Length: 178
Image (cartoon, rainbow, N blue to C red; front, side, top):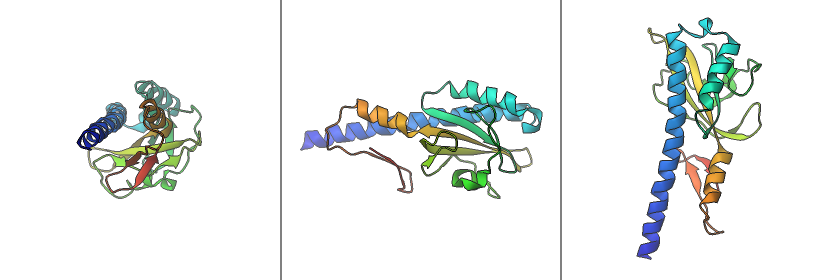
């Protein structure tokens, strides 16, 4: 029994580290994107096609991230790494984006698992607020962690058939179940 507890604790630490790396990777990509947007003076100085190329270039740096995206200060999708011609969908439809309206949230927001608007595949959305020097909203940066990435990883662990794993957010919400 003691050995089983120790193995379970070791597995839990390994899974936590895996999740932490995926989230940190996405956060770094969003921060890099935000720095580039700020360095260029905001979205008004970057056309949508150029932003698509920048997001695509950044997204390919991580196998965990399915997509990167940017919403402008009116909460309209400005660009995504998945489509050069992305429609200007309303970010207010997505709680992980809408939460930034009127609220200065300086930390990463981890949203509920949602189907991607273009792929239809389940994603775990992450978002960061990008502010101007005066504290007003410049943009909302987002990334989508692929639940299929986590599923493939969990399958590779060769766990017993009756094993169950769940990815929980800090508030206890279930983001993914395997």
